[in-house]
Length: 190
Image 1 (cartoon, one colour):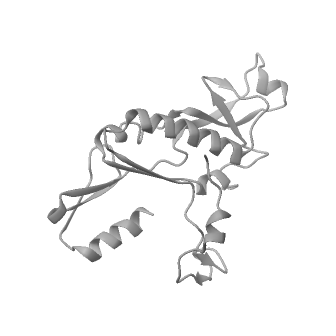
Image 2: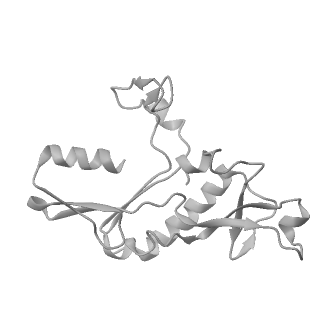
């Protein structure tokens, strides 16, 4: 999504300075418009890390969990937590990581969701965890955002590459925007 936006803006005005804003992974300033785009990479929007069972037991241990990934649904990841206070536009684009079985195997390394420091029982499935995370992060962004700032929330860019993985065949088949029916099939959080 970020790269697409940069490409569109470059098409309008090629006068661009590439740099790395404080706290961001990369950025571009479009000099004619005094517009800066900064990219803050964060996988899940919220703080996460590995979790291991306590020898003293606990709610997750009593359900048989021995290890996994702790996902704090109500704590913004430090890679972007300050961004709403100094950016005029904030775009959330997450989703790909939430369904990555190579990163979060549901058996070997499940996503274990925590709220206010405590595990959520019964454990949530990743789509439910994503919904709860987005609700918390939208609230966080609304409180932290500069006055008159704009926020866009996209859980995952629609798939446009079909017929294989990006590096194993396939092609980009779409050359038209999604229809209204296709858009309504996309998940959303109210």
